[in-house]
Length: 71
Image (tube, rainbow, N blue to C red):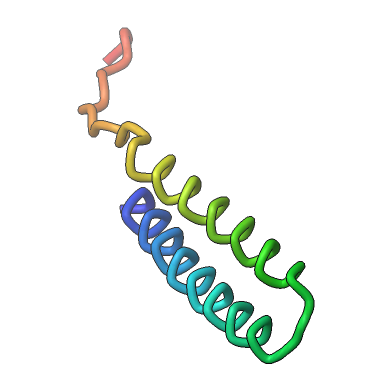
């Protein structure tokens, strides 16, 4: 369950990073510095990398508890 929550948080991070990039492009077109766009791209790339890493990470498998030797 924690793996799914982590993946969901990463997906939300990609969404937020994309909104930041869109805002940076709008501000750049209005005359702001191009560094905002560069930072927006950097944040988006790192968020996508995190999402891909979370999706590709193997999920832990449930294993039944082994009885102790003295049981």
